[in-house]
Image (tube, rainbow, N blue to C red; front, top):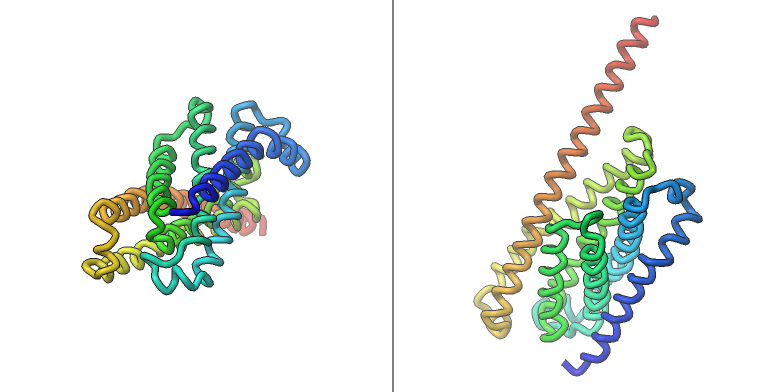
Length: 262
């Protein structure tokens, strides 16, 4: 593609911006908005800063991705070969973040190392590289980015836990419910339409033009990411059910105590 320099510029700018957020901005900002931040251990601060960066990235690419999903006429009209110029900006931004986050994970492996995150990031980068260099499947790549809309709620849950918010506080429970619902919508509900679409275009001329390598890369990368999303959804659901059960038990116990007092 003739916009290689633009893509590289966006990826590099994104990378250095998120590195700056992690090493400097998050520390300053978090200390300003949260009195509990300074009392955290060094290890907790590393993960805190990592999640602040994750939230910033998710809001940027998630909201822009939603806008493109609804209004980018070129990719909507032709999901496989539509003009990717707007989507590539979003994908390049996400790629810069993923490289930055991989570096942060590797340098702080004992604190935040997670093999599933490494697999997730590498798989996504591999898929995005194909889109950015070949200019195909832009709509699909952007569709996958909508999954990032769930990350702020996942990160907020960790922030509450780090600050020792009561599990049954209204803020914690509300965030937990929103996290489960949004995660389910953008990462699980989105799975069937994607594979239905793949089935619908399989064998068509635009699909054949992708070539066997890209076809396999598209399907395999989606499969790997979806398996991890299902695993995370199961884990989140178990946690949500456990909290709801504990709340019910607490209410039942409270009712019994009030009954005895009466």
